[in-house]
Length: 303
Image 1 (cartoon, one colour):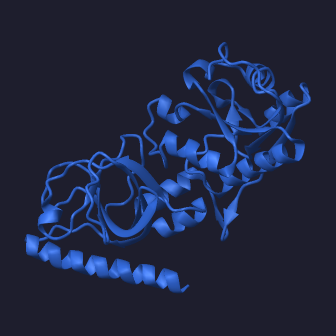
Image 2: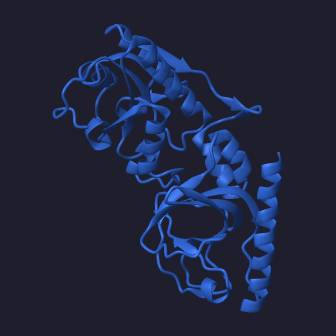
């Protein structure tokens, strides 16, 4: 959305934030905006930048999801997404942002944000400033308090730490959904197939977080159907090729996935990535990985 190209819309309830990872705190903000819109019979809109501000300024933070996934999940919650150009709006003062974007373009009746929300040039304005400026235009402001899950603070930085350390189970709990990636399946060397363990190979975009190297119990969604699987993330030291990828062996599946985009969701870190002395030794470990994965999902079913 460009300021000079978008017509004013009907009254809206606007959720503000980066929403990277859509963790429990983000979902609280989004759901409050959606519920307000339903109570007042107005539109529910999530305002998102086309690029994360830190990424724009060259910081490689490791995003928790792609822009496409973020918009998809926000729409599933029940809000529209309005994407704005960070390059165009980064020099707006806090006052200009409220007047020109929230009031004149989005016609906001109420806005919703997290306790640590910052906006305006240099990100110098905070939630208190948002309340003060919005009051001039009769826009209600609702600030979400800090979110805790099982006594732990929920924020995107903490999620990145957990994923990089392999604690995907705790990360999933804070996100209220499984960490996943929806990426194209590419051709590999087909070594897995020759060993009886064909894999779906995917490369991570350069701005996406890469979880700890190792093997995970996972699920893979193909054309709407979900399969149990296990996934190796890393550089495959037994057959070094100096690249990092995700390799997923899907249970009870043998279709051609090359060129398709599939979603892999990580459930549990099972073991470190290891260099094996021979392909035969690797195959024996893969058999153990499959059994461990099957046992994990069996336990999940029995809970």
